[in-house]
Image (tube, rainbow, N blue to C red; front, side, top):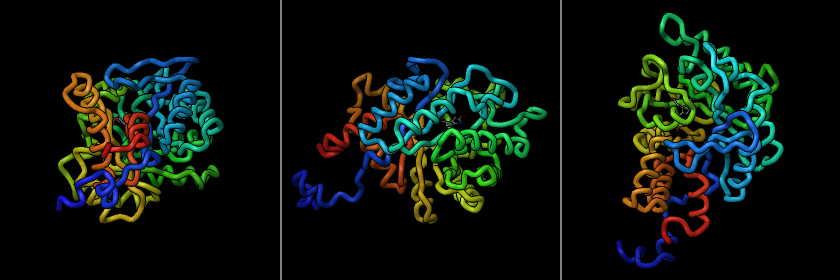
Amino acid sequence: MRRFRRTPALRGLVRETRLHSEQLVAGLFVRAGKGVREPIASLPGVSRLSPDEAVAEAQRLREAGVGGVILFGIPDRKDETGTEAWNEEAALQDAVRRLKRAVPQLALMTDVCLDEYTSHGHCGVVKDGDVDNDATLPLLARVAVSHARAGADVVAPSDMMDGRVAAIRRELDREGFSGVAVLAYAAKAASAYYGPFREAADSAPKFGDRRGYQMDGANRREALREITLDVDEGADAVMVKPALAYLDVIREARDRFDLPIAAYNVSGEYAMVKAAAANGWIDERRIVLETLTSIVRAGADFVLTYHAADAAAWIRAGGLDR
Ligand code: PBG
């Protein structure tokens, strides 16, 4: 076995999984203002950006060879039903319009959810202390349409309501956006790995938790049922989230389904690497490339990750075997 491991050239001939920068999608947090770059303590290297700064960041990402961006909105005001989420004049929609014009080479994706926009922090309409599934669907569809109207290529519902992919698909088509794709956060676990994101987006639920709608991470068969449902409802691509603790789900989904599969290397996964690297306990470059390679090896076609810019630069500079 060792003969083809002797030199970088020999290893390069037989490498089975190759990471490309175009497979990486960077997460961007967008808030109102101009010239704003507000660092996020829990996500070193990531900032809340005003629309103009989001454009500057996206230009850098494109130059680095990154394939796309996914945008999360950080609103100035929240209310019971998250009305700011479908406000056409809000920072998120503004950023989408600008990005579409300035960096059409990037795949432009938006996260469709209400948790950043609701005063209670849940992903839908709360009735009698619980999230009302069916009352939430038309609101999610409205958010998706507002993103499509602004110029999103892909809308990505992350709420985990039942039936939301069908509701969004129907409304997109009715409004003339039949070309906009739906990337469903299909198998999304109720995970502790979202902690840093919730700090970044100020979106932690004010009461209870998300276990009533996000999946129990212990369930592999149920994850496949979730994916099947989203495919049947018209999803163009499906996502497994988080990535690293769910590589078996990614692999099983890859073996079972022929549509594109995404994986989300989430905020907690990123924060752990950054913290250990800051302490000098790990080699950040090698850890990040090894991790992203493992996610692609498990079967993901593309990966959402806050490491996108760094990873793209490292790939360009020779990748893992340098
Ligand atoms: C919901 C959403 C979340 C993430 C992406 N979309 C938070 C949640 O479900 O609580 C988490 C992403 C990450 O941790 O990086 N809008």
